[in-house]
Amino acid sequence: MSFVLAIDQGTTSSRAIVFRGDISIAAKAQQEFPQHFPASGWVEHEPEDIWTSTVMVCREAIEQAGIGAKDIAAIGITNQRETTVVWDRATGQAVHRAIVWQDRRTADICANLKAEGREPVISQKTGLIIDPYFSGTKVAWILDHVPGARARAARGELMFGTVDCYLLWRLTGGKVHATDATNASRTLLFNIHTGQWDDELLEIIGVPRSMLPEVKDSSARFGESTPDLFGGAIAISGIAGDQQAATIGQACFRPGMMKSTYGTGCFALLNTGTTPVVSKNKLLTTVAYQLEGKRTYALEGSIFVAGSAVQWLRDGLGIIKHAAETGPLADQSDSMQSVYLVPAFVGMGAPYWNPRVRGALFGLTRNTGPAELAHAALESVCYQTFDLWAAMRADWPSSETASVVLRVDGGMTASDWTMQRLADLLDAPVDRPVIQETTALGAAYLAGLNAGVYPEPTKFADNWRLEHRFKPNMSQATRERKLAGWARAVKGVLASDEGEG
Image (cartoon, rainbow, N blue to C red):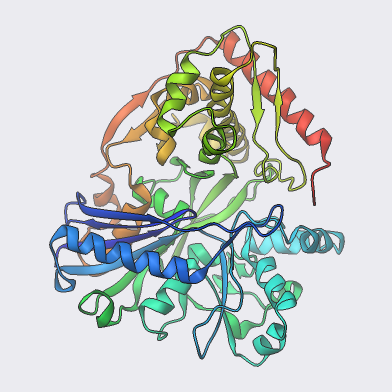
């Protein structure tokens, strides 16, 4: 049994990848599923769509690989984090659509918690800030807005889970209600210092303890899939939230190593070792992974809009047909123009954390056209990464002396133009690995580690291979001028602060 099946359940699609024992890819399958936007700033998924698309891609990948359940040593799950599902313990039916991590409907709940002075204790225990991004207030919203839900939850009839937990419950036929420490650490309900759900946090946010899953190591025997799903029972032995899984897939096991993943949003994580570092720059302190009961921590910066800025060019403005056109189009832009896009379509994430502001374009001229907009959209991702990079280096001074390299992954890293501009603005090397499927690889590794297919972390790190290193190639003067322009644009957006709450 030398194969591992990785489930990568993302925001816009479900994917399954079969990895061999040497971490090469045997097969993969992907399926998009519908997004629901019932109100401004609201984003929902139908849990049944998440489930059916996941099962379908798993079956397809297994079939493509030409293997059976008996050949698969383990399943690993990685998932869109913070997305919240509440379902009936007896029937398995969700009581409401899943509320997606991008959803901003709980802004008022968050504002009230802050007004009550709750943020210091919540931040101290969770490493997070109070923001609609996280799961806890989403659970509270469902309990308060679905008729009878709060009473049913109090009677122990309802269960809460992030997407990994929901999939695990379905895969095991309702036998296992569990999650791992990385996903638990994104809920506002989990104490990252004790490694436990926290009664004070549960009371503040209003979530009954009976709804919560058991929290386990990221690499652990969680259960096994029911035989009817894939032609035989398969052990499920690895779970991690997508950004932590990517950190593992990028082999960032040493303190000081840093990765940035470019998907719908962009998420940068800096491994800080066994000590949780408290950010002074509005970064999050999170669990990077938990192995054999020991937690490794990271500083994390979250950008809400990265790849979705390119989708906006395609679907909103119609100036490109395919994402791949963006780099070549940006290359044709007028170098005399300085157009800045601040893509605060759903507010701004780290290090600003303002859910109320909305996006803006600065520096438009009569000659601004599709090329300049493409340039501004791609560059916005680089500028936002720079903001995180600067905040991380300020929070963790030892990174100043380390020769820091940024390891990158995700769809946008296919754009050489964007990665070169990123290296130029960071004034640091940007490394793109051979295996781009780092999120799925991280999930596969955690499962394979528990199943005995893959070696311990330091030996696994030896398998990491560089595909291309982008070296900075921009003059200091140009770099400083561009960064100053970005800072002015951000200041302008933050000053507006008049979006919907």
